[in-house]
Each structure stands twice: as C-alpha cells, then as structure tokens.
Length: 133
Image 1 (cartoon, rainbow, N blue to C red):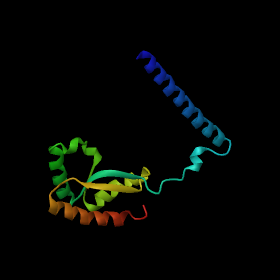
Image 2: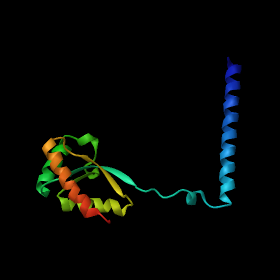
Image 3: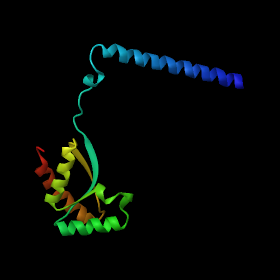
Image 4: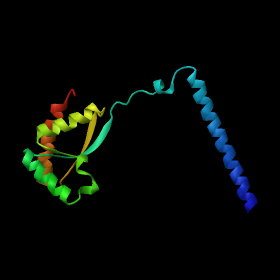
C-alpha cells in the first residue's frame, strides 16, 4: 500500500513539475516580446455590489436604513451600505467611480415592496445623474 502511495505521489509530483515547467517556459518566451499585462485588454466594466436605498427624502432614507441596521442587516457594517436622497446617493456613488468602478450592482436595503419600487424609480434618477462620471 505504501509503495502504491509513493508511486502515485511521484507521478503527481512529476506531472506538477511538467506543468509548471511548461507554464514558466510560456512566460519566459513571452517576456522577450512584451509584458503579459499588455496582452490583456482592459475590462469593459468594473462592478461593485452595494445594498442601496434611495429615499423620498434624506430623513425617510435614514429611517429605512436605521431599521435595517438595527436588525443587523446581513451582518454588514453600515459603512458598506448606501442610502439617502437622490442627491446623497449620487455623491456616494461618485466616490466609487473615483476608485475606478464603472458599474454598481444594486440590492435594496428593504424588502417592503412599495419602498423597493419607489427606491428603484429614484435609482433611475441616480443613474441619469451619474452618466458621464
């Protein structure tokens, strides 16, 4: 049994060395032409997911966010959440754009359907305000 195990280990090690040698050869052969990083096109989009609530007003958004945070919203720190009026959310998302993000995948902070639908409508206003940013 030990002999079979040792043969299997030797075979696996040999295959790993072979694969790593081949990979190293590709990298070395490419390095004399141009860096590998130049061969990779930049991404079309760099997305980040945020849990968002766009309120009718700053106070209404604060009320919805505080209720979610009080319940321990998904274990997230409040700093990872985005809420506020349309203008406040625009400013918070502009900060993400300055970090290189091009898209935000939004999940709503609340599951109350009327609030989600209202937030979604206002999120369209946020999107329009961020065009060109």
